[in-house]
Structure formats: C-alpha cells, structure tokens
Image 1: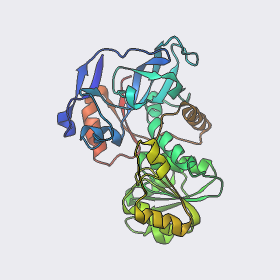
Image 2 (image 1 turned 60 degrees about the horizontal axis):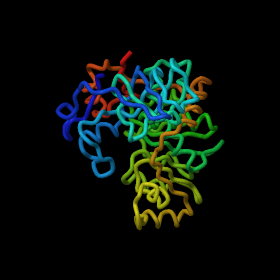
Image 3 (image 1 turned 30 degrees about the vertical axis):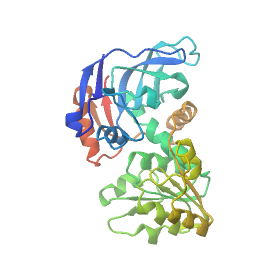
Image 4 (image 1 turned 180 degrees about the vertical axis):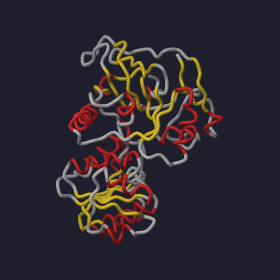
Length: 327
C-alpha cells in the first residue's frame, strides 16, 4: 500500500515521501480502516522538523498522521462494536500513528462512527482538534454562563472550542486577526477581538476561564484577566504537577512565576495533554448531527499532493482544517 512517510528530520519537502509499504497487521481489538481522508495537524510537521524528538521517538521511516476517516474492511477477533462497511473516524494513538496512507489499523475503543451528515473529509478534521478542545474545557468544568476567552479563534482547536463552549451555554470572547473577524463571528462567539486593533486585556476581564492556545506570555497574562478563583486551561503552557506526572516527568515543580500567579488569584491551572477517546468522539458525532458543531475545512488535497498540503499547513494561514483525500 502507499503511505506518506517521514524519512529523515528536516525541511518538510526533503524529509517526507510517498512510499510503498506493507499493510498494517491487526491485534484482536483492532479494526483495519480503508482510509478515505486524513487530516493534517501542526504536531505532524513539528515531528518532521525534529522539534519533538525528545518527547516522541520514531523509528524512521515512519508513516505520518493521527486523524483519519474511512471504512472498516477487517476486524480483530475481539471487536464487537463495529462491522465491516461501517464508516468511522478516529484520532489514532501514538503507537498506531500513520493515517496518511491507504490503510491504517486502530484500537477499536478509540474509534467512533462518523457523523451521518459529514463527508469523510469533514469528519477527518474533527478528532484531534475536537478532543483537544473538549478535554481542555472539561478539565476546568466549563458550564452555562461561564465567561470565557478562547485565544486564536480561527485555528483548528479555537474554532471547535468556540462552538463547544457555546453549546455548553458559555459567553464566549475570542481573539483573531482582522481578516478572520467575520468568519469567527459566524462560529457563534459573543465578542470577537481583533488583536491587530484592540488589546484583548482591555476588552475581556473578570473572566471565569481563559483557554490559552498560544503559550509563552499569553499563559501568564491569563491570570490578569480571570476573576478571583478563576481558571486557566492551556494546551501550550508549562504542565501542572498532575499532568507532568502523567507525562512521566518526575520531580517536576511548577515554574515559580506561575505558582505565584495561581496563589495570588486562588486560581485553577491545567495543561491538557490530549488522549484519544472513543466515547468523546461519539459525543462529537452527536453534536455534529444535532448542528451544535460544524466541521471547518479549509483546503482538500489529493494524496499525490500530500507534501504540498503539509507545506501549506506550515505557513499558518489555514482557516480550519487541511485535509488529504484518498476517496
């Protein structure tokens, strides 16, 4: 079968290529998915560039990609929840990475039936961003009437998070650039802040929650605009001590500056290290079918142009998801 593989670390165009490889084998709880579409994520090209070598070790060449939608063509002996022909989607676990390929095997517990009202291309764009947003927002118990700032509302995670927060009944502020203001407003945000012309800290304050998708100073500045006892949930900031333990970081201590800010505001602080989750994917399916969540696709590339697709994603200009179609 054909697969897009990382062959070495470095520039995208020099480091990935389409190769002929063996079809993946199945364990008793796995299903074999004929891939119809795969979604690209920044984690993919960061791995290609070697930026995650210390956290994710790869045996090169290694097939790329975590998000997939497709059709079940084979199943392991223990699989009871899927049948041959089911249309499914998943964010595969690290050990089964390799969705930009003609087939992928995946643990059936981490798979869900794709929304009936979504194409394969739309469904492929949902898992990683959707699971990241849900896990980050649920880690701080988002609820009705919470006032929340979601940074980078036009990004993959941000655009899903706006819709999810609105479905929960929250009052949503978000930041974006001038060209994306109307587009992000259409996702349902109550107040869109154009960071090129406005200071978000003057517009959004006394908040229940800040969802930090940007890291660096944005993580620390979040404590300025939450209320006493407010919450900061991040996907890019330093780990909290509980998450550090899950990530295998022993003897970890919160950075002193962060620890001080948490104490000053009696705040909750949480880093989400997203985990694949079949039950949460089932919840996403229901929300898409109910119209609470709309998949956001920017561009669809054919498999033969997959390297170009990654180069485009790396420009940071995508509005929504970049998809490779194998249909």
